[in-house]
Image (tube, rainbow, N blue to C red; front, side, top):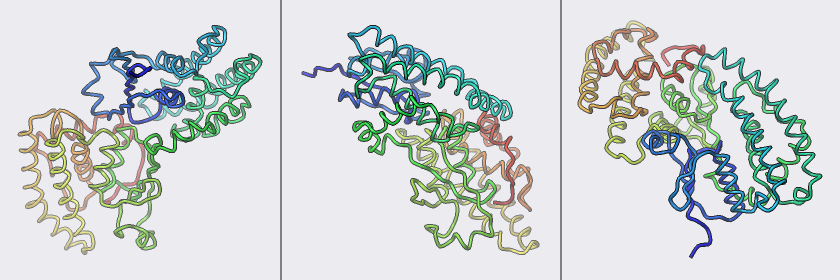
Length: 420
């Protein structure tokens, strides 16, 4: 019979509020089920959680919410929290409360949708909020060393939490906040070194599941075949490097590309090709590709293949002289494209969902939006902006994606657009 309760920690497939809890259990050799949900799965389960949010912790079937409470429980169970020393526990709790307060001060910048306002909030974070709190925390950490419990090499839960924050800032994933924002605080630096070099922490991060891959999407400086993937990552909150290259660089790059073409997605330095396959991966990472509903996944693939035909047909016209190109595209508009959009509109109607293939947003919706957004702006010579007008179900999907806050934010950025 196990000496530990049955524990299940549920969160997204990322670090954030669950990472310190995972680490505490791992360091203390406490067995637990580490469940990581996609955003799509969370949407289906949200109403079953106590406050409609994650993380949640199940202990022998009882569901517990609030990350700080979970971390303290993990600390008690693993010896990373001083259960027999109320003063030491209070000192740790004080630091947990300070980190929670810092998080609440930062949260408006993550909710703000206006790019200029978001930038101003982030700059305030970098120049005022984070330095103020880290300065106070640094001083308290130095004072902790005067207390006997904290003179040992043992790890404590407040150290895991503070290190997780420092690690996050150093990753450079928060726009307008420099990666050096946590530098120069002696006690914080010492804490980070202590945690990151601990054998169990090193062991934990040696597991690829616990480290987000470094993603780099390479394409031309325009929307084209890379746009659905960019948007999928953006909507799903997946960090990636958006590398833009010039057409003039293509011949130099071609030998290094798996099939001599773009887009290419590099995962931890390994390149992968073909836009639909890349989009499917992006959808999986972002929770926008069905992982358990095989019928819905089949519908998504049908839509992606349809738009692959669309882009391939247009690509054949690129090398043509202007007059021949116009004639070829006129044939496509009056024939293949009209048949394609008519058929797709009927398919979406038949599937009867809120979105293209069902009741959840998927990369199929993003693919539809991206294709329509390309010609609606009048950027394709010979392809009318009104090509998809009159198809009510396709139009509905387009508007739904267009009005997503993340897509609105993206569209407010200025990027050159052309046929690519």
